Amino acid sequence: MVGNIYLIYGDDEYIKNMKIKEIQKRYNVEDSINKIDLNGEEWEEIYDELTLPSFLSTNKIITIYQAETNIFNDRNEKDDLNLPSPYTFFEKILTNESYKNEILEDLAIIMVFDNKKISKKNKLYKYITKKNDIVKICECSKLPRIENEKYLLDIAKEKKLNIGMNEIKFLVELVEKNTYMQVNELMKLCFLNKAILRRKNNKR
Image (cartoon, rainbow, N blue to C red; front, side):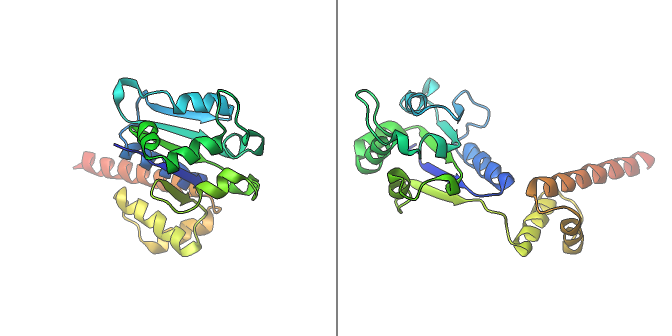
């Protein structure tokens, strides 16, 4: 299974994390030794992990957090003798079919970053964000009010919580515009709802 390169950014941490979990689930690596999270490592360490074969030849996902500090960092634009720059490495993946198949044969790469902290002159960022079949760009910004309410209502329905849009609107009024906090309050209602149902069933 040839993987993809996912670029994930935006100011909604909850939606970003849900997108990462969705990709991990798609590749069946949610609880796997081949689910690797890198956070703030130097490019050399990241490169070693990217070029290391997956364990037992199963799918592998590498999630690189704070990619603006290592992948999209101007100081890493020069090649060393035994270490290609991030630009050289990813350009080869995107332009060389055999190298792409070799690296992405059983690997998906997720890069999570703050696009506001990346220089507009960064060569790799400009190159990799161009439209192509391998790179998938996922913007995870805070939703507008109406979309936010619908998003929460869908979660309530998924959890079989019997509330409507009026209750969701009331919840949004009470809780600050933070999806983590809003979903957390919904989960409290779910637990309360289950407790009430259990008590009713026990009285029968």
